[in-house]
Image (tube, rainbow, N blue to C red; front, side, top):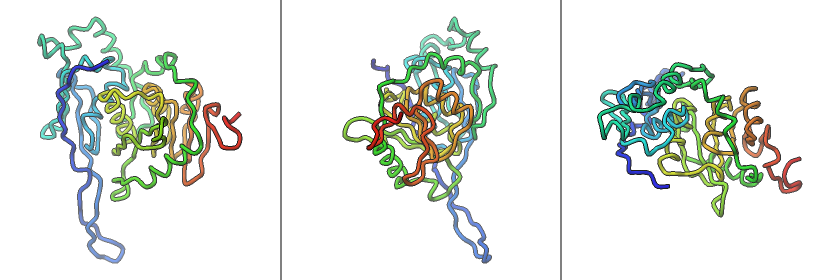
Length: 294
């Protein structure tokens, strides 16, 4: 289904800056550091949240935040996404406000529900964002990941190699997390479709979610890779994006593990070189010698 055109800016900030540092020998060394900027999200003039971000994909970040927090159900409800770094803000305007001057909050019969959703927050372990609205856990039972999807060890190793060789801000400046959406279909299995880095891994995953929403990209035949740990919120977001495979070079938490099992997600952690640990969803993982892992 096509989405009506959205007015959207392309106001990315420079990802890195150069400063002077003094090394162990007392010499002044020009050093690249990562950017970090506050970005306040407004929906129909109502302030939702302020995120600290690299600023590399602010429009997609804002859209992904709305999507993953389930504040807007349909992209067609939105008319514009406008980032203004002079005020460190992004203004998201609904078609309702654009047409009649009435906000989504005033016009929607679910306004009280939205107010409740904004009020109920669970503080999580996320960096640079770290909160998830209270009813996301309740919505997990509606998630249906594709049972027939399969991920081969060969494709997993391809993803790991592509990530390893991908140019990144982390290599220049450190201090950021990266997320990648990779293909698991056709001749380009393992290819990176979208790569985003930010000061927090939740910002990076939201930016990819926003891009997928805007470009109408589905998650059923995709693999999601993150440099960060696999917490409950990371698993929930990947599940909401419909992605059955979640991969990380880091570890995971007990709640992340339990939620992945609950939604039937294949979760693989500690990916370094050719090493990996398959934690959940082993029925979807195919090895050369044994087929799907029993």
